[in-house]
Length: 479
Ligand code: ADP
Ligand code: LRH
Image 1: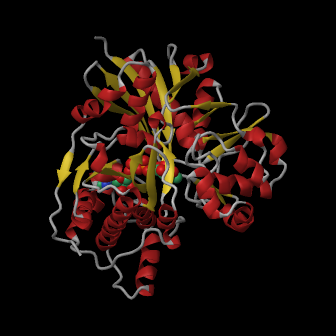
Image 2: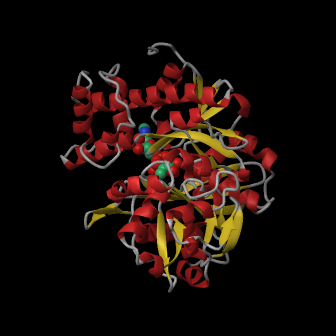
Image 3: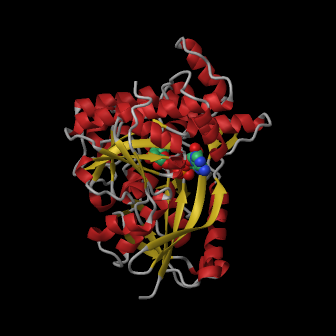
């Protein structure tokens, strides 16, 4: 049969890419068309995403794909969670969306938590309360600038914003809303209860709520002309990058499996029929988010390779440029970690001099300070493996099901040391792949939305389309 071609636009917190997916009826091939850095901008004391440049880079990739590959059926955007832009009454983006690491939320935390205490937020939404959540950001914005209630027509979470820029259709896709702290735990729809209790205008919610895998419309004629495209559909796939990544997991047996999605963040979890909302899952710091098909995943957001990325940024600023692959090798060569840090310590959550903060953490906890980039990277990677191990054990406890195999996906699995240490410290088999998990999951949800593949065939289709690496626990580094 004819090969179908479509585009996945996958935006992570550290980089974005336009990927071509080709499906010939038996295999999905994914090819990178354009990759670009995603560097936030500090302006007037606040941290923002440069979304216009991101849109420009995306368009460049779409133009290139159309030039080389001709007819493209559709595109879909998936992005990191929680952030949003405001659309005004003229239909324009009001200002560059804030980055979730911006610190304007902290002063409003207690005000919000008086209106809805954290444990109740968890019950209402299934989301673990966190300052980065949309709900904390939106509440802070409206407290700081009450006039926004008049000047804003709609708030659009990041993937919904790009879909709107491409198609003119404003929608609330369920998987991305499931990261917000503003959606109902059971229905997945924006929660009127939460909006009302916080005094947030209900009118901000987009009129259209879209399940993952909804055809929203067509790329506007103006963009078709600008980029030299034919007609092309805009699809809300699983618009949260983690939902897309999880849609790409080549499970052999879902029951005994957990996943770790490794990028800027490490997401450790497993799929479940419904949300897991108990005192235990709350106390351990788990959250519940939506999967393609309306099921749930219960997971923990662990501050992941961000700590490594920020260290690299710091070294580069002082003249020492070390790429990802090189740094992974230095960490492997450095030998066992001289210290173990808690990646979720607040010290590591905001931009800054990470190597210095790691040294500070080690002094505070009476451990040896790593000195070289290799030793520092080793501390980070080994600490992540330890954090994963704790989360996997907790996951078994809160779901009451043993975890026998861990699927690791995302850019971070190119760090083979991280995968091996994860197998060693957790004492479980690790199956690593695919690397471009979000892009592949994005393509798959589009193929499903277009009726070109069947749900039951997806795992196998992905397994035979990707190269997977298995790591056995060696017990070498087990504590
Ligand atoms: P995000 O989607 O959050 O932007 P990615 O899934 O692209 O993140 O993963 C990026 C991370 O993957 C980098 O921070 C780096 O630690 C790791 N990585 C990328 N390429 C390599 C490589 N060649 N070797 C080792 N690690 C890599
Ligand atoms: C990972 C991710 C994660 C969280 C965070 C803000 O890229 O989407 O699942 O939502 O970004």
